[in-house]
Image 1 (spheres, rainbow, N blue to C red):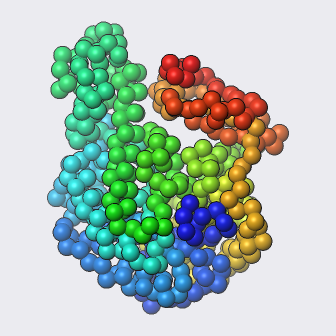
Image 2 (image 1 turned 180 degrees about the horizontal axis):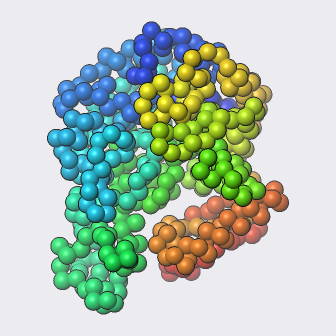
Length: 480
């Protein structure tokens, strides 16, 4: 890690949305954050219109004002690319930028992450907004790092637009060379699925019982991952042209159909995770029998550590959850924010940023509470955050420490994606993974997830006394 977030001490942050609040509130908010021990704010991940309110028209005054105030107050900033929420002027003019469901019905404007990675026009417009943002703000002294997009593959990790089909055909041509080789690899002789030309191949489409060729599906999941990684890499390369030498680049969250390890190596300095342990208590499954409950979030932290040995938490839960449609989870009890923060630190996080500073009063996430409630007054959660800052200072000598585990659980993306579409394998794999995790938790046995690739060295595995490789059904020559 670089500069301020560098493993030398623990750093506390919060997610802030200056576009949601009158500018007269900014100074007081920043001062109160600093008094609470918060040193970093993340901004701009959903603010495309504040930089490009209409196509080709760029305005910088809004974030200029906020960044200058942050610099004056001594607050550091993580600046985001706003590509997770394309504006209405874009989706109305270029509907080909929208993602679609498996029937080809477009997801319309009004939520987020409604785009597809493979639309040429969307790629062009994203390059434009990233370059304009990075070239203008990249040298600002308040900025210490950049977040790419927001939660890659969150909510939707399947893509069925016409642009995706065109890109999928190209992906397959590059992999197999000829249709004849693809037919051999996919076993298309079964059920008379043999293809005569590339134009006959699509992203998976609705079939009777929605059953598709499993080899087709596995290559499709690989394609989705490659598309997302290319999208992130394009942004990372653009930012590096303009950002300061010590500024870092990251993205947040761990989601499906995405090789996070490859994405990290190609594009990021380190990974950050969004941790919401109270999802274990969501109202729709509150009564579910589960002796682990919110402890199972350490499983996700172990997954993050498998990408970055030392990592950050970009969104640590600080209040009750809930969109207007789903994910209703209760307010953390006294001490739970501390518990979850220490859980993150114990697993390797040196940066913990709370979501969010103020609870929003409008929009889909107006029931997704932050440190402060609607009133903005001091409350017990803010007092707890202040106490966490004091604890972090007292623990600074362990910052940058490595998590010590003697047990390794081997995984790889081909088997993860294969299990997703193989119902027999999926049941066995889920039960084995859950049971193995529970046994390790209940015996207080530290473990690592270790993701295999064809270039994984045996030396990386020798440090573990016990290795598990549950139910691998796909093995390459290199892994054998």
